[in-house]
Amino acid sequence: QVQLVESGGGLVQPGGSLTLSCAASGSIFRPNIMGWYRQTPGKQRELVATMTSGSVTNYADSVKGRFTISRDNAKNTVILQMNSLKPDDTAVYYCSYWRSTTINVLWGQGTQVTVSS
Image 1 (cartoon, rainbow, N blue to C red):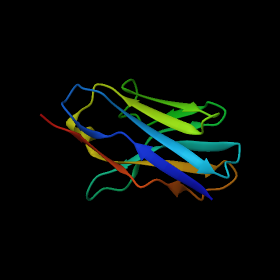
Image 2 (cartoon, rainbow, N blue to C red):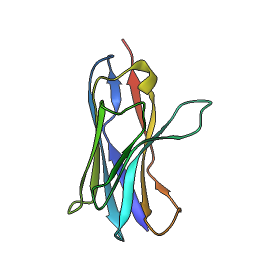
Image 3 (tube, one colour):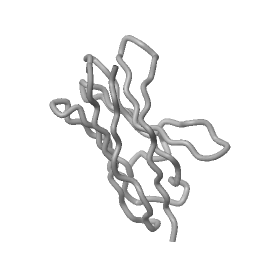
């Protein structure tokens, strides 16, 4: 099984930036997809951004142009750079991993991002 260890997150003012990272360990199979989802109270967990091991990206419309996802396959790490943050970006952010041949998703523990003055 794969284990996901997240770091980053915290409190930032509107317009500011944060960077989240997620390191995967264990039996990493390729091709795979890693990415970030977020969830706020009363809402379903939603896509933020994903990136395949082949460097194909997918972004939610709400974060396009502001967030950038990247991967270091050698280190099995995925990074989410978040710029121009808005209060609506406040959520618990979850790292995810799944093999391209399955829909069984592995989740990290989640990290809180709060955008507020």
